[in-house]
Length: 267
Image 1 (cartoon, rainbow, N blue to C red):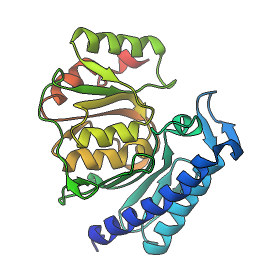
Image 2: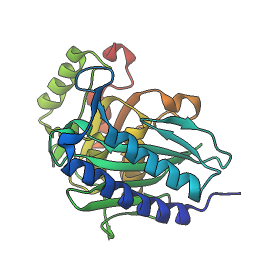
Image 3: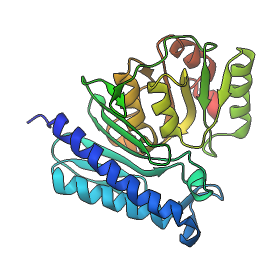
Image 4: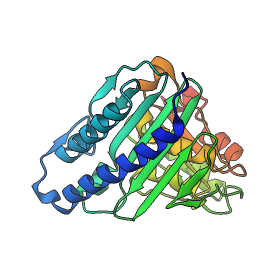
């Protein structure tokens, strides 16, 4: 039986609001949070991340027990429907813990063919980005479209982390600057992917991201008329991979300049 996307989109949107309210409560009381370091000193997790993910997972399980789940803080749980929820309770933990607005709740879903649902809620900014396959994309209920222009017609978002050598990131930035692309970094890759879908950024690229960072954003971009570099599915979905999404006029050049397909550039 094909999963009911309309019911899932509606419930995921409600859950994102509930999760956003809980995350915002912790944000407003962040001095009381217990903070831990994961892989390195800038890779942080707090009790807020964990409690928000539990809220999301429990609500999704109650509504759709047949669906699988994959989350940043609590890993995988199996399902039988062929649909997997991909959850980042707080994308942009570092900005979150430092009192900056650049964070969001990200709830995506995918099947064997890729992203099917994307819900990204930015509570401090008061924005809800929503999309489902074949149903278009909206921000606060208003339809949105990816930018049509080339790489130089607007602002590009980029990200990086310690999963790739710093020198390779520098080389990528150099290529982008030599191509006269203006770029920015805001702290949440998921939120910047949503901004690509909204036409505020011409594209976004990051050499290594996890599925929970990008799946919702990918669904938004595709439904807004943009293009994405496919993220691995199946067993490979649990591993980091290059992430790239852009409007149709910037996509090909961004693919060329980032060189994500050339593994030798990223080791």
